[in-house]
Length: 94
Image (cartoon, rainbow, N blue to C red; front, side):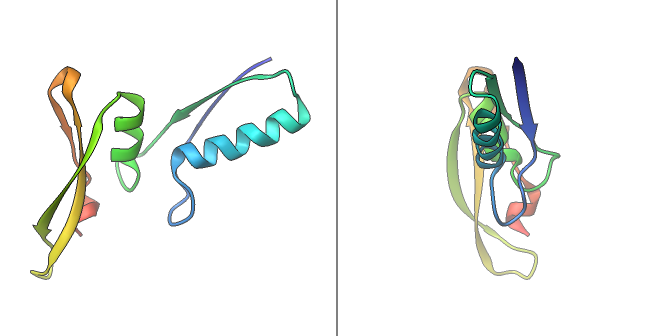
């Protein structure tokens, strides 16, 4: 049996990969010989940087930005060097 798990993060508790791995573990308890593949998924909000840098072999970087109230906020973003692409979550600054 081949199974693909692609689940969004569970806000504030599990990343997409952590949730997928937990589901994979449960599947393997029920079907030990299942071939389970976990892939990250995000809807453009929280977890998008994590999902894309994981799935595309990118790297995480941090920078201090100005938040919506004028206070400094540490925001993380991803760089995917292979395609010269930056991955940003606007929610990270808010």
